[in-house]
Length: 115
Image (cartoon, rainbow, N blue to C red; front, side, top):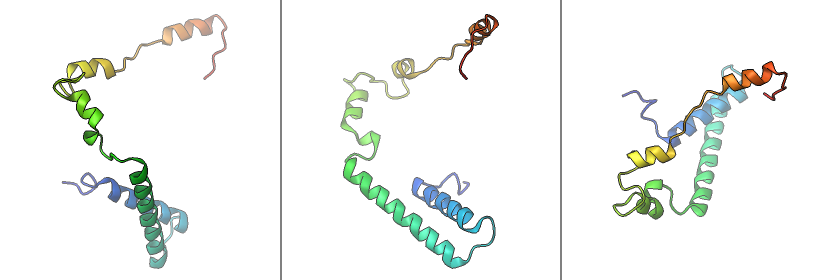
């Protein structure tokens, strides 16, 4: 499996933060190892503080652990066939309606529309 596809959220944030730090600090040129280490350390500290702040505010970190979600999709719940069931698809699906003909008609009559 490709290592990029197997990367978790923390690894992605660390890698993206490091890449951004290198791009900002180095401006596309080679950056000293100490600068890279400092940038990676900063990203790690920032990431840890965000997770600590989230842990204080959000007691339930995963939606599948949320008791309301469990009740909603439970056997006696509103959507017993699960998140990918027919009812949830009907309720949560969005539909696209082509309204370009109406817009063209309004413009033909001289109506100024905001873009």
